[in-house]
Image 1 (tube, one colour):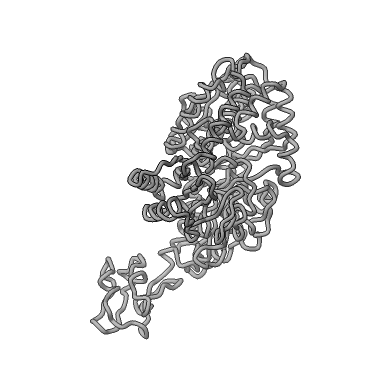
Image 2: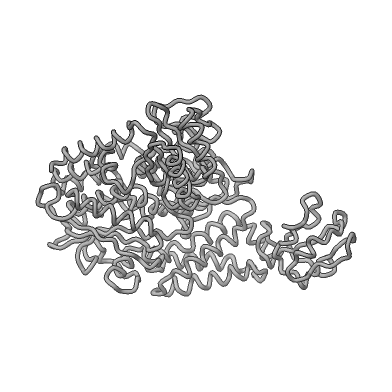
Amino acid sequence: MKFSDIKKSAEDEWHALQQGNVPLIVIGAATCGRSAGALGVKKTFEEEFQNRGIQAEIVEVGCLGPCYAEPLVNIIKPGGPNILYKNVTGKIAVELVENYIVNDNPLPEYALGTLGDSKVDGIPVLMETPFFKSQARELFRNSGFIDPTNINHYIANGGYSGLAKALEMEPAKVVEEIKASGLRGRGGGGFPTGMKWEFCFNAPGDEKYVICNADEGDPGAFMDRSLLESDPHALIEGMTIAGYTIGAGKGYIYCRAEYPLAVKRLRNAIAQSKEKGFLGENILGGKFNFDLEVFLGAGAFVCGEETALIASIEGGRGMPRHRPPFPAQSGLRGKPTLLNNVKTYSYVPKIINRGADWFAGIGTEKSKGTAVFALTGKVTNCGLIEVPMGISLREIIYDIGGGVSDGGEFKAVQTGGPSGGCLPASHLDTPIDYDSLRAAGSIMGSGGMVVMDQGTCMVDVARYFLDFTQKETCGECVPCRLGTKQMLNILEEITEGKGKPEDVDQLVEMGEAIKKASLCGLGQTAPNPVLTTIRYFREEYDAHIQNRSCPALLCKELISFRIIPEKCTGCMICARACPTDAITGEKKQVHVIDQSKCIRCGVCLEKCPKNFLAVECIAGQLSEGEQ
């Protein structure tokens, strides 16, 4: 069947669904939606429609982005407005059926916004709300709107048009188009994608491979997972174009086993692509043959490094190797191998379909296109966002993110995952691009962005992330294996009140040495959280070392709890709650805390009645006489 016929059939199916004669209920059912209760909400709708004898279509889609508003439900009534509802529960689902489906009352109090051309009094237009207004949804254009398990939804929205167009181009022309677009690798390194494709295209050999790094392992990051769950065909199409371009017949998607829904939807999408003739032999009636396989990783963070990932696919231990030769010359099984990230491949069909100039027209001079971030931490609107390169950190955190949660005060933001840097308020106007973030001491990374408030201890943050990377090191090279361990030991001593004045300078010296001498990207970036927190928050290190106190009141060994005599009424609530019996005192008499027994768990502060506030946490250590 010709691609034009396949596309026409898919468009007819899509149009029939969107313009049907029965209500259409679209439920966000990616991992974030499911964890918030989306499947239970779906069941409630099904039961309500069955009990009322109402015919309706219910479709599961992926992640739209505003995870803080999950579960999300989009209701499209025949001839009526298209309304997206937030934080939908079973109870709200029943109300929506009764009030909106049956009686045309849209219940604005539950709505997040309207979609398309819909206008409803009391409900904002979704794409004009603060969360979406500054975004540029290109990579995630389909996410949250199409059924990721139905290939026709993807095709009807432009899917596989890029592949059909690429197959009519000479492979060298495809390479030139990717180079002209300015696309850089979205896996963290930011290497020019077109240049990497050109290396592999020019590499001699009849057998070549295409590999996708879907081994997303950064704490708090879920960009790749979301894309795989919401729009898996974008990756498949991009990898197939890559296979055609470099002359490969086989591709692997290296995905961590901790992503069961992503793996399930990927495998389903691969099977559908083969049925439609987009994968397998004689793709779209031509002579090009290409197949894809999902390879499950065991969760090793270091396998995000390309040579370690290749070693894992080959059946070995995931350990980086020296380069050169680079994978483009000698990769999987010694053959030329093209290896990119999920997001990088997923941009490719859009670039081929819409042209290199379109992509190059977004972003900055050296950082083209859009950037995707998992916005998490102490921010009001947590979720998945896509913004044009060049937007500032301030716009993301305050305009899109809604500012620091619970009315808190901003302290720092970390970009780039555990290997990224922590930037202070003075850097909020830093533009989001590869070079600006690197100059500030951080990195773009794969897209993690963690916001921190004044209740965050930056020394402990450095310790936490270094602990993560130290545990994930493969142990192959000495600078990373031993250097990060020594740095971690120093940080632990500082947070325990055992720090020495010379420790900070030693951390800087060791961190710079590890960055220069480590074999792979894990070791080369592991010191970033330590170096940036020292660079921007040196006073917190000094407080921990010189004053033996934690200004953020988080490091247990450097804080104390005391009872304020003037406020204590002797209610005994804190004494009964104390797990170590450190609090003593008679009823209606002032209580005291035995500092030798106190384990600084904070239960007394938590349990003290808010109208008394007789317990306080202070920076520093109290003697028993000060209790």
